[in-house]
Length: 235
Image 1 (cartoon, rainbow, N blue to C red):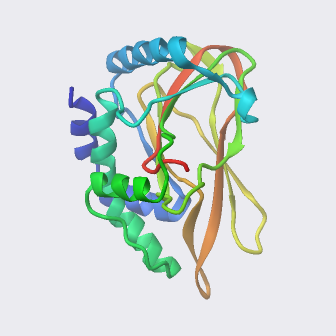
Image 2 (tube, rainbow, N blue to C red; image 1 turned 30 degrees about the horizontal axis):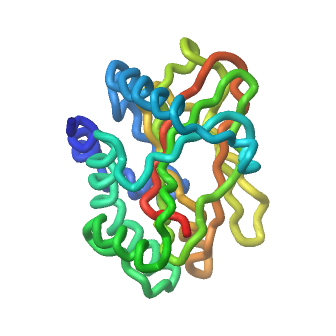
Image 3 (cartoon, helix red, strand yellow; image 1 turned 45 degrees about the horizontal axis):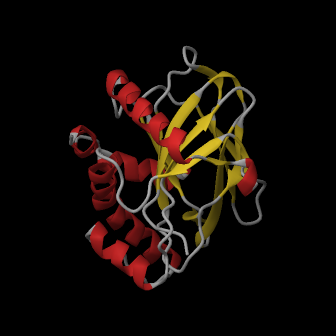
């Protein structure tokens, strides 16, 4: 099942990089069609039923999360590798702009191996289910020596039909400026590439670090199922 990787390859990556540079996120509408999204949601709910954890136990809001482990289920495995191939060169340009010497390797497997050598072995990619009244608090996944500066969020449920509320929310803090709130409504099968924590923001005197957190607003009714793909692991 390579449909996700194929869909990723067909995107306009020059446009995606421009949007990430301007806003700190890029919207990929209709990355997965509705039928495939519902199939993946069913697969994800089976995983949640067997190994879910409470978001409240992690002080991350209300709802349930299941981490996908080192070997992601198909097609997330091939999809994450395809995303990395396009995002790693962008991440290196971000590091160059911020004066960071480290460069991300061209192949995802090499970056994974660096994570393991640095003691980062706890998977961060996960399925999240939010029911009526549930939400995900503002947070960042930025622990460890090797942090990949972008992550991917995919919605597998249909807003309006399956649930209400549950919008993707981001806040960005720029130096000497008020925090900037951003709300990105997603449709079923949509993805968003967002900054994991910091990104370069070009000001009048060069590049600064803009700090981003993300959340999911309270679900008013129904069930919201989504997946977050991270490229680095936690210590």
